[in-house]
Amino acid sequence: MREPRAAPTGAAVEQEATYYQAIEEFFVSHRGDPLFLSNADWLLIREWRVAGIPLRVALRGIADALDAHAHSWSRDRKVGSLRYCAAEVEAARERWERALAGGDEEIDAGSALDRLESALAAATGLGQASRATLDEILKELREGRSGATRRAADWESWLRGSERTLIEALRGEEGAGAVARLESEIDAELSPYRQRMPARVARQIREDAVARRLLEAHGLPRLSLFPTG
Image 1 (spheres, one colour):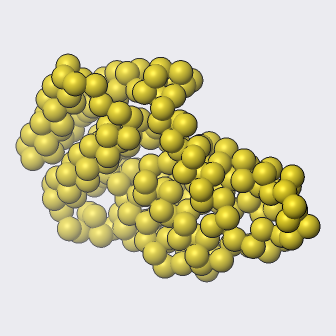
Image 2: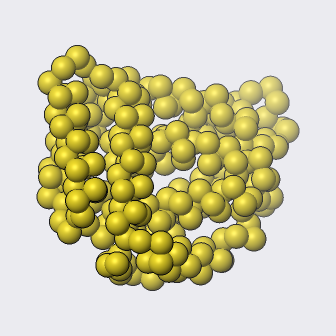
Protein backbone atom coordinates (compact mmCIF):
# COMPACT_ATOMS: atom_id res chain seq x y z
CA MET A 1 0.00 0.00 0.00
CA ARG A 2 1.09 3.57 -0.63
CA GLU A 3 2.65 5.41 2.32
CA PRO A 4 1.02 8.67 3.42
CA ARG A 5 3.05 11.60 2.13
CA ALA A 6 5.58 12.72 4.71
CA ALA A 7 4.93 15.83 6.80
CA PRO A 8 7.48 17.78 8.84
CA THR A 9 8.38 15.85 11.98
CA GLY A 10 6.03 16.75 14.81
CA ALA A 11 3.97 19.13 12.69
CA ALA A 12 0.70 17.19 12.88
CA VAL A 13 0.85 16.81 16.65
CA GLU A 14 1.94 20.42 17.15
CA GLN A 15 -1.00 21.68 15.09
CA GLU A 16 -3.46 19.78 17.27
CA ALA A 17 -1.68 20.33 20.62
CA THR A 18 -1.54 24.09 20.01
CA TYR A 19 -5.27 24.36 20.78
CA TYR A 20 -4.84 22.79 24.20
CA GLN A 21 -1.59 24.55 25.05
CA ALA A 22 -2.84 27.98 24.01
CA ILE A 23 -5.88 27.69 26.27
CA GLU A 24 -3.77 26.40 29.16
CA GLU A 25 -1.27 29.26 28.87
CA PHE A 26 -3.97 31.90 28.41
CA PHE A 27 -6.02 30.74 31.39
CA VAL A 28 -3.05 30.31 33.72
CA SER A 29 -1.53 33.68 32.84
CA HIS A 30 -4.82 35.59 33.09
CA ARG A 31 -5.79 33.85 36.30
CA GLY A 32 -2.56 35.15 37.84
CA ASP A 33 -1.71 31.85 39.46
CA PRO A 34 1.16 29.48 38.58
CA LEU A 35 -0.97 26.36 39.06
CA PHE A 36 -1.53 24.32 35.94
CA LEU A 37 -4.70 22.70 34.69
CA SER A 38 -6.42 19.80 36.39
CA ASN A 39 -7.51 16.66 34.54
CA ALA A 40 -11.08 18.00 34.55
CA ASP A 41 -9.85 21.23 32.92
CA TRP A 42 -8.05 19.31 30.17
CA LEU A 43 -11.17 17.27 29.51
CA LEU A 44 -13.23 20.47 29.24
CA ILE A 45 -10.83 21.77 26.58
CA ARG A 46 -11.25 18.45 24.80
CA GLU A 47 -15.04 19.01 24.80
CA TRP A 48 -14.53 22.42 23.19
CA ARG A 49 -12.15 21.00 20.61
CA VAL A 50 -14.45 18.12 19.70
CA ALA A 51 -17.38 20.56 19.48
CA GLY A 52 -15.45 22.59 16.91
CA ILE A 53 -15.17 25.81 18.92
CA PRO A 54 -12.41 27.86 17.27
CA LEU A 55 -9.44 28.70 19.49
CA ARG A 56 -9.97 32.45 19.30
CA VAL A 57 -13.64 32.02 20.30
CA ALA A 58 -12.69 29.89 23.32
CA LEU A 59 -10.07 32.44 24.37
CA ARG A 60 -12.60 35.26 24.01
CA GLY A 61 -15.00 33.45 26.33
CA ILE A 62 -12.28 32.77 28.89
CA ALA A 63 -11.22 36.42 28.82
CA ASP A 64 -14.84 37.55 29.28
CA ALA A 65 -15.28 35.26 32.28
CA LEU A 66 -12.05 36.33 33.97
CA ASP A 67 -12.69 40.01 33.26
CA ALA A 68 -16.13 39.72 34.85
CA HIS A 69 -14.60 37.98 37.87
CA ALA A 70 -12.00 40.73 38.22
CA HIS A 71 -14.82 43.28 38.65
CA SER A 72 -17.03 41.14 40.90
CA TRP A 73 -17.40 41.09 44.68
CA SER A 74 -15.47 37.80 44.77
CA ARG A 75 -12.47 39.17 42.88
CA ASP A 76 -10.14 38.48 45.83
CA ARG A 77 -10.77 34.75 45.43
CA LYS A 78 -8.81 32.95 42.71
CA VAL A 79 -10.70 31.19 39.97
CA GLY A 80 -10.03 27.58 40.79
CA SER A 81 -11.03 25.82 37.58
CA LEU A 82 -11.42 26.41 33.89
CA ARG A 83 -15.02 25.24 34.36
CA TYR A 84 -15.70 28.72 35.76
CA CYS A 85 -15.34 30.01 32.19
CA ALA A 86 -17.56 27.41 30.52
CA ALA A 87 -20.72 29.54 30.38
CA GLU A 88 -18.87 32.50 28.81
CA VAL A 89 -17.17 30.22 26.28
CA GLU A 90 -20.57 28.88 25.28
CA ALA A 91 -21.90 32.45 25.02
CA ALA A 92 -18.92 33.40 22.84
CA ARG A 93 -19.61 30.38 20.67
CA GLU A 94 -23.25 31.42 20.21
CA ARG A 95 -22.23 34.97 19.27
CA TRP A 96 -19.73 33.60 16.78
CA GLU A 97 -22.33 31.36 15.18
CA ARG A 98 -24.85 34.19 14.90
CA ALA A 99 -22.25 36.49 13.39
CA LEU A 100 -21.13 33.79 10.99
CA ALA A 101 -24.68 33.15 9.84
CA GLY A 102 -25.20 36.87 9.32
CA GLY A 103 -21.97 37.40 7.43
CA ASP A 104 -20.58 39.71 10.11
CA GLU A 105 -17.52 37.63 10.94
CA GLU A 106 -14.08 38.18 9.41
CA ILE A 107 -15.03 35.22 7.20
CA ASP A 108 -18.63 34.22 6.61
CA ALA A 109 -19.94 30.72 6.16
CA GLY A 110 -20.40 31.19 2.42
CA SER A 111 -16.79 32.21 1.89
CA ALA A 112 -15.54 29.34 4.04
CA LEU A 113 -17.64 26.85 2.09
CA ASP A 114 -16.43 28.30 -1.22
CA ARG A 115 -12.82 27.67 -0.24
CA LEU A 116 -13.58 24.25 1.18
CA GLU A 117 -15.43 23.18 -1.96
CA SER A 118 -12.50 24.29 -4.13
CA ALA A 119 -10.01 22.43 -1.95
CA LEU A 120 -12.04 19.22 -1.99
CA ALA A 121 -12.45 19.36 -5.76
CA ALA A 122 -8.65 19.66 -6.14
CA ALA A 123 -7.81 16.51 -4.15
CA THR A 124 -5.26 14.18 -5.74
CA GLY A 125 -4.14 10.56 -5.48
CA LEU A 126 -7.39 9.17 -4.13
CA GLY A 127 -8.34 5.54 -4.43
CA GLN A 128 -11.69 4.32 -5.70
CA ALA A 129 -13.42 4.25 -2.29
CA SER A 130 -12.18 7.63 -1.07
CA ARG A 131 -12.89 9.23 -4.46
CA ALA A 132 -16.47 7.96 -4.34
CA THR A 133 -16.82 9.20 -0.75
CA LEU A 134 -15.43 12.61 -1.62
CA ASP A 135 -17.65 12.92 -4.69
CA GLU A 136 -20.67 12.21 -2.52
CA ILE A 137 -19.56 14.83 0.03
CA LEU A 138 -19.16 17.39 -2.75
CA LYS A 139 -22.58 16.51 -4.14
CA GLU A 140 -24.24 16.93 -0.74
CA LEU A 141 -22.32 20.15 -0.12
CA ARG A 142 -23.50 21.68 -3.38
CA GLU A 143 -27.07 20.51 -2.91
CA GLY A 144 -27.09 21.80 0.66
CA ARG A 145 -25.88 25.20 -0.42
CA SER A 146 -28.56 25.49 -3.09
CA GLY A 147 -31.35 24.49 -0.70
CA ALA A 148 -32.59 25.93 2.58
CA THR A 149 -30.20 28.10 4.54
CA ARG A 150 -28.28 26.19 7.20
CA ARG A 151 -26.93 27.59 10.43
CA ALA A 152 -23.16 27.57 10.89
CA ALA A 153 -23.52 24.97 13.65
CA ASP A 154 -25.47 22.68 11.30
CA TRP A 155 -22.79 23.00 8.61
CA GLU A 156 -20.05 22.30 11.14
CA SER A 157 -21.81 19.19 12.42
CA TRP A 158 -22.34 17.89 8.89
CA LEU A 159 -18.75 18.62 7.89
CA ARG A 160 -17.33 16.76 10.87
CA GLY A 161 -19.50 13.73 10.18
CA SER A 162 -18.45 13.81 6.53
CA GLU A 163 -14.80 14.03 7.52
CA ARG A 164 -15.09 10.92 9.68
CA THR A 165 -16.54 9.00 6.73
CA LEU A 166 -13.75 10.22 4.44
CA ILE A 167 -11.04 9.37 6.97
CA GLU A 168 -12.35 5.82 7.26
CA ALA A 169 -12.15 5.45 3.49
CA LEU A 170 -8.59 6.82 3.44
CA ARG A 171 -7.51 4.51 6.27
CA GLY A 172 -8.88 1.51 4.41
CA GLU A 173 -6.98 2.43 1.26
CA GLU A 174 -3.70 3.04 3.05
CA GLY A 175 -3.81 -0.42 4.58
CA ALA A 176 -3.33 -1.51 8.18
CA GLY A 177 0.47 -1.57 7.99
CA ALA A 178 0.86 1.94 6.64
CA VAL A 179 -1.64 3.35 9.13
CA ALA A 180 0.10 1.55 12.00
CA ARG A 181 3.44 3.09 10.98
CA LEU A 182 1.82 6.51 10.78
CA GLU A 183 0.30 6.04 14.24
CA SER A 184 3.69 5.03 15.62
CA GLU A 185 5.22 8.24 14.25
CA ILE A 186 2.42 10.27 15.82
CA ASP A 187 2.88 8.46 19.15
CA ALA A 188 6.58 9.37 19.17
CA GLU A 189 5.75 13.02 18.43
CA LEU A 190 3.11 13.02 21.17
CA SER A 191 5.36 11.63 23.91
CA PRO A 192 6.44 15.08 25.27
CA TYR A 193 2.79 15.96 25.96
CA ARG A 194 1.51 12.71 27.49
CA GLN A 195 2.64 13.31 31.06
CA ARG A 196 0.77 16.62 31.26
CA MET A 197 -2.54 15.50 29.77
CA PRO A 198 -5.20 12.92 30.65
CA ALA A 199 -5.17 9.83 28.45
CA ARG A 200 -8.43 10.83 26.73
CA VAL A 201 -6.98 14.18 25.71
CA ALA A 202 -3.82 12.56 24.37
CA ARG A 203 -5.95 10.11 22.39
CA GLN A 204 -7.95 12.98 20.89
CA ILE A 205 -4.76 14.77 19.80
CA ARG A 206 -3.49 11.49 18.35
CA GLU A 207 -6.71 10.90 16.39
CA ASP A 208 -6.76 14.45 15.09
CA ALA A 209 -3.10 14.32 14.10
CA VAL A 210 -3.59 11.05 12.18
CA ALA A 211 -6.63 12.52 10.43
CA ARG A 212 -4.71 15.64 9.48
CA ARG A 213 -1.83 13.61 8.04
CA LEU A 214 -4.14 11.36 6.02
CA LEU A 215 -5.96 14.36 4.56
CA GLU A 216 -2.80 16.34 3.86
CA ALA A 217 -1.41 13.39 1.91
CA HIS A 218 -4.05 14.21 -0.72
CA GLY A 219 -3.94 17.99 -0.45
CA LEU A 220 -7.12 18.02 1.63
CA PRO A 221 -7.88 20.37 4.55
CA ARG A 222 -9.83 19.48 7.69
CA LEU A 223 -13.53 19.57 6.90
CA SER A 224 -14.57 22.53 8.99
CA LEU A 225 -15.60 26.15 8.56
CA PHE A 226 -12.48 26.99 10.57
CA PRO A 227 -10.14 24.01 9.99
CA THR A 228 -7.16 25.51 11.78
CA GLY A 229 -9.09 27.30 14.51
